[in-house]
Image (tube, rainbow, N blue to C red; front, side, top):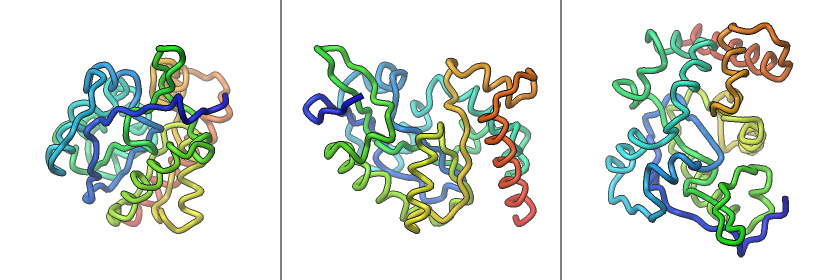
Length: 222
C-alpha cells in the first residue's frame, strides 16, 4: 500500500500526555475506528492538562479491545507481576499502573475519495513525512518520561518491530513483549492464549512463551 502524504489526515484524540508513573506501557499503532467514532466524533479534542488527558485515556483508549487484552496478558502472568487477581482492574482502580498510547497518538486515517480508512501500517511510518514527524515528536519524545516502565506491550508484530528498533537505539530500556492485536478479528488467538484451543498457531506460541519468560523474570526481581 503506497502512503501518499496528501491523503493522510489526523484527528487529535486528546491523549496528549503520557503517564510517567506507568509500570507497563501498552502500545498500538494509532487510535482506531472505535475511538474515532466513540471518543471524539471526528473532532479535534484539546486537553489542557495531564490529568485531563489521562482521564480521556481511561474513558476512551482501547475501547472495545479491553476484555480481549486483559485475557491475553492475564495468561502471560502480568497479574502476578502486580499481585492482582486479574488485569481487568487496570481499566479501573489500577489504571495508574499503565499507560495506553500509540506510535501515532492522533487518530490517523487515509482519505480515499471521501472514505476515512484507519491507518494500520506501522512499517510505513518511516516512509511518510507526516507520520514520521508525529511519531518522533509524539511517541518517541514521550519515551523519555517512561523511566518507571518495567515492560512495554506491543499490540501486533508491526508495533513490536518498531519498539525493538527504539530499544536498539537506547530510547527504550524496558523489556518488550508482543501480543496479537486484541481485536475481535483475532478471537482465535485470544482463545489460544487462554488455552481454550489446541490449534497450532506458531506465532502465538512463540509470543506466549517469550512473554511468559520475560514476565517471570520481572516477577522474580520485583
